[in-house]
Picture 1 (cartoon, rainbow, N blue to C red):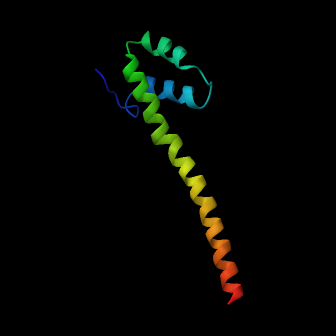
Picture 2 (cartoon, rainbow, N blue to C red):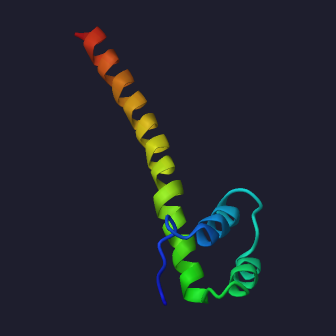
Length: 83
């Protein structure tokens, strides 16, 4: 099996979460931990990538979008005052 959904497989979800957030384990450690449970390196790589794009990337975009909106609002406020 080459792909497992991280939202349906708790081992992959927890492993990817530990890789990105909590314990900062290395990829080699993650391969070793999940490899013993029968996961292939490709499945682990897919889980790491999925976790990033599902849980981390949206937070980065939201943060950037909030800064852009603040700048736009300040600019519009300044333009209204100048009129």
